[in-house]
Amino acid sequence: MEKSLQHYFQEAGTAYRYRPDETIFMQEDEASLIYYIAEGRVRVFSVTEDGDEITFEVLHTGRIFGESSFFYGKKRPVTIKSINDVVLYACRQDRLFPYFSEAPELAIEIIKSLSASNDHMALLLKQAYLYDRYQTVASFLLDMDRQYSGHLDAENRMPFTHEQIAESTGLARVTVSRVLKEFQKQGLIELGYGKIRVLNHEGLKNKIRSDKA
Image 1 (tube, rainbow, N blue to C red):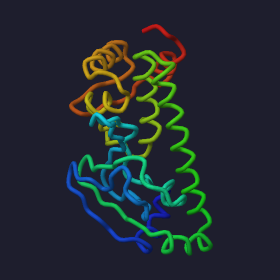
Image 2 (tube, rainbow, N blue to C red; image 1 turned 120 degrees about the vertical axis):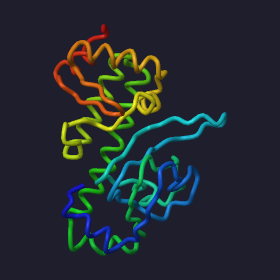
Image 3 (cartoon, rainbow, N blue to C red; image 1 turned 180 degrees about the vertical axis):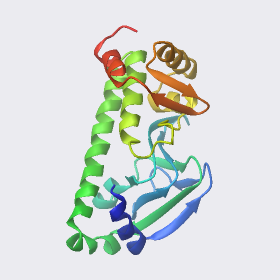
């Protein structure tokens, strides 16, 4: 979301601060708020009947979440926890809606967020059923590099560990580490401590187009 729209969430909502690994809301909670991330990152995941956690997405500063349940009045389909120190603005429907007439672009941004969530779910299905491990990791890196545009660090690196990528892709951590090391050897990415920089976008796209490493 454009930074110029952040003040609407500040005016309509309430600020909340979370330390790392704190729950923001849980699966099956009643939905009454939409959230804007002013600082930090959160993890979106679901818990299976066996207690396993399946990560769907990691959201960063400037992103919105909780909008689908917020508009449709349904229970939360996922759990969301903070990854690092997080500052959120939480808004009730009746407090945020009046701003739509003043700033139609605010409504458009929320619709875009819903569309982006649908696109991301479609990508997850591709990764799960159509892609091999190389395609899955390459797809994840390109998707995250696009989402983090404007939020990368001074060296254009994304803040992801091998474990976080494994959780987000459904691959084993050792598999992710091997693929990342191969990509680094091929000059596609640069690895750092908890950081990844994409060096060759076209090379990663070629990994997705091919079913071979």
